[in-house]
Image (cartoon, rainbow, N blue to C red; front, side, top):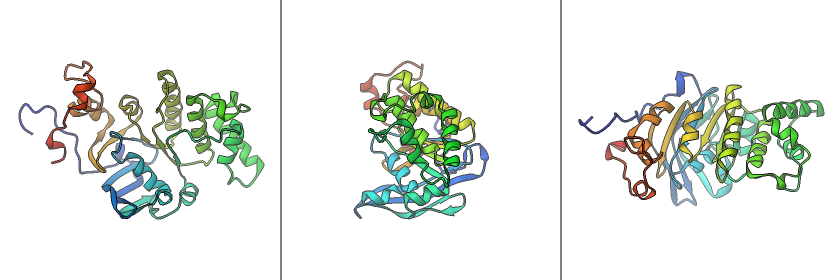
Length: 286
């Protein structure tokens, strides 16, 4: 490290699972091609440990949502495909599988945009998420588990989903994902468009799920709340992982503080203009 260059960069190449536990999900040099022309992901490698919480950070267009879609199999419905590398879940390859297969394996994807069924009630939305249950009794047990994890949904169970607030709809799509009894949940931009109070409530739900042992991979532009819940984080730029580390390391890293948290070295808030024109040091990409 050059003297006076600031704190050492977080390691970039080891790709160890958070907290040293065995990986539940592993991506190795994954590439994604759209329309056989656009290379959207360029050698992405990352790991999600069993019961761990990992966040994927980066600006718009960095490739974060594409990464989740490649993992869940949704990419195939968007004229994209995993063109290189490998994705494994619980030790088995899943790249090339459709989304229904990944759900049955225990991996669910909560997509950006709070995609509720607006003309159905909260409980009807949840029941659709548990369509695979073999009996009504099993369905009811799953519903009870969702209501216990997210008590607000129990209060709203008869409310039409289209009339819920944005935060309530976000809780609903998370609850619907829980109905599939996953071991890993991929969540894309859970705070998008929400008021600060609702962001706190949604992330309180995610904290409870994490504490119950559900593994989480969260794509989020609100870096503060993401690093507060996560054990480990990756930073993406232009389809590549450019930085990774434990959450506390990323919070303390000077480059992350300046570019993603908008803070200067003294902890003061940087102006939008300063952040917009900030350029990360070349040593990141070395």
